Image (cartoon, rainbow, N blue to C red; front, side, top):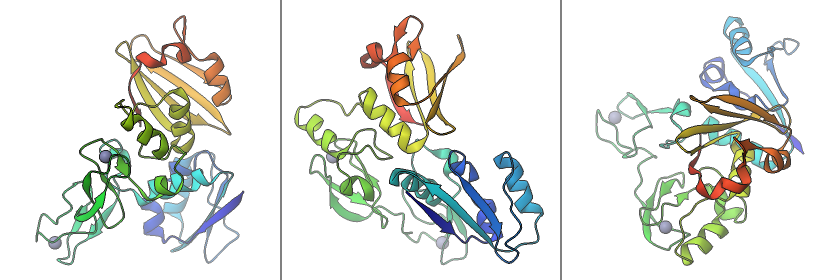
Length: 263
Ligand SMILES: [Zn+2]
Ligand SMILES: [Zn+2]
């Protein structure tokens, strides 16, 4: 569908979690000597190549088929604070007082000088699901204390799509709320969330299950610790048709799974 081109500095590219590119076609070139390609078989080696290089600036291209993939990457690279997603909490900002502050904390104030950052949730808004009064930050992020909906820019634009950090679409969330039902994703919603983000999980009978994106549309399905195992599916349809837990199809027991989430 298209490609995106980024021009990070060496410091910037090394601070990125390059694994966001793992399921996409991507190319990393030096900015000044564009013949030099830094891609390697695996991301760790790619990063090592970048580290060793004398380049101070890079060009990153990546192809995408669906717009969601770009959102996914932007989301992960811009790395806003969420409770579910600590692994991408690489982001920090420089406060006016000169200290680098992690944006992990929800209260969004500098612990040294007390100044508010852009991540401080102090802008008044209304929850798009339940209409409660809520607060969001400068970037539009926040969470409704009443219904649990998490605000983000894209779900308001694409109301029938499942978009991180929520597990159901905005339209569906509104319907569920009006029917007084919990905002739990059905298997289709869950797999849409997975397609968007590439890493999701759930619990069933006290065993943790996780799905990881593999190659093109493939899914690696893991469970454990006891019993543990792995199964592979070629795409979402294959998973719906064939994924089993013991003797039961995931689609048949979905109503009983717990804690569906992004990993
Ligand atoms: Zn400060
Ligand atoms: Zn709400």
